[in-house]
Image (cartoon, rainbow, N blue to C red):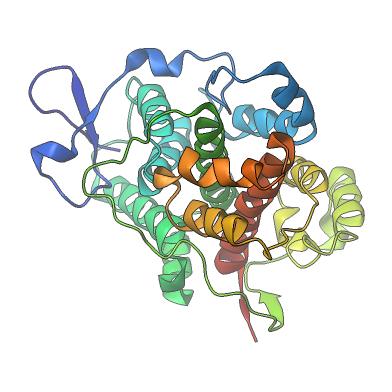
Length: 328
């Protein structure tokens, strides 16, 4: 994305924000790129918490490296560069408003060469950015037109699967980081001008059908066939699997997170309902004020984290369903 600099070298602003006021400038923190844990961003967590979450943390960490290689070859079917991917990640991080995540993806993106200055390249990146921001923060505005525009700017089916996985995954990462910051009692960093947005659609039990082409069995690779067989057996992924299987490595790691956050969220507790609702709608405002009541009511820290992580994962699946199909 175009870099806009204000007041010297200490500030950097991503073009996806609509308000150009000076107060909206995000600090550029170069050291935020240098983390050992690209998913939790080196949060200093108790060992017992990390161990209890290892089942879903391991595939989440692996997805960071798979989705965001710092150098990646492009070709006719896979056109998303490292810059495209990190620009999209930063757009979603900003939509979620979690400062730690914004710092990280801004620092990774800043040194990368951007696209050429042609009208076609600018239109392509602008369209990807607009789509990412809308799906992350206002999925109810995504329609056939928004989806067709990705095709019009040259994204292949493989690109569309990857870009939507990035949008869903970064929303998931933002909420998990917000939960762990709340566990540690870190102060909330609310980005100036960030407002609560409709981060999910109302639950629906209507039949869902894919609009994006599914993997054709006669052309499927051995890996694709294996992933199809495995993940269509999981109810939460059954409908999405034929589309997600265009990129089976991503699907496999997504499925592993599902398997390890399987527990359904019991929303009979007002404190848990309130925590899930705020985390879903505005992760930047989630804090110890929402987390502590859960443990006060008898939930262990590990159990509370698992339940909140599952709600974040449900938001990821929600975005994929919006992106890849429609209800009938």
